[in-house]
Image (cartoon, rainbow, N blue to C red; front, side, top):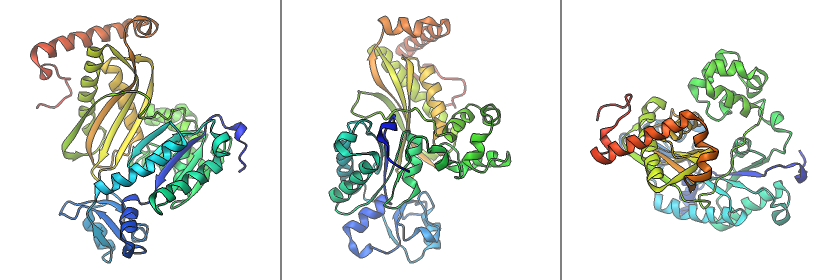
Length: 395
């Protein structure tokens, strides 16, 4: 695949550090190099945060119970996580990313998207961008490796970064997405976990190409709204923007859970409460949100985020919740989650032309805003617990 940069409408890089926590431990203690290493909780309910590449042939992986990982690889060295050290090294990595682009969207301590569109004159064609980025990360960290995927969309770049791990670089030029994606298992589609994967396979769709070749309406009938998204991804279509944390202030709400939760139905009530808090704050400050971000932190302390832009901007908690609920389809909700959060970003002043052009041109939207204002007044007078959605659990 050649690098004709003129054909690239966008240049999106997904950079993912290789076995980050374990690699930092091996960097700090060279005696651990070449040995299977498990980083994670050592107690009765401990889970693996990261398994080194030497431990993975034994079937060890992140989110696995530590007891199971130790049974599979009894010779592994087991270390508790040192998050302060990982954050220190992550700061160096993110510093490198920001030298390449002002548009950096961190997904966790060890993973980020970069929008490098138009940077060819500085860093060379897309493949050279990836090479230079990886070389600078290695130099800045004293030897850690990062795998990178370069494509015209976030989804394809993410898949590409996993393609040649560890220490790999995969470039997927525009027009070659289907050649790259279609032979892969349906489980490589963003948002397809074990359950959805089984549904697709029972319907005769084993590969991404099988999904692409089906009529999109059939996929939607089978899976609902997520089916439309999956069909687009199977063709390599993903218009989501890289949104930098530096771009605009955000208003967020999050809850650290007393017990880890799994699955959409368990997470949704906490997302609903966050949407209510964020919507109320937006209306109080007279702001509208141009985007919504959902934030989940796994039981192994890995941060996962997904986001979407809003057209028109809104301060409606119902709209925030609806978009956030749709974003849940992009997470692997079979993982246990310890934190649920929602944030509004790309904030603009409310009222005036923005509302006239968007929110007030539909009677349903105006009724929703009146309802929000009424709920705000009730909560102001009687407390935040005075109004609850009927599906919320008691307490």
